[in-house]
Image 1 (cartoon, rainbow, N blue to C red):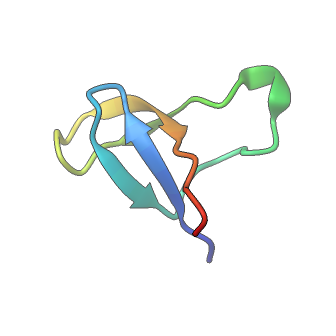
Image 2: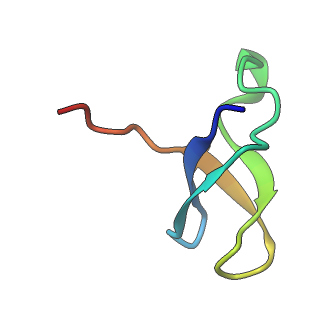
Length: 52
């Protein structure tokens, strides 16, 4: 299962295996996911990882 690194609206960065509908362009990049740091449903967006 592929994991996605995301950032919540409060700025917390974490990875999640459940980032639903990544291919749905009409909905935009944001999704609601429960943040493990603040334990609330937050809008999250994928983080672009730097390749070395």
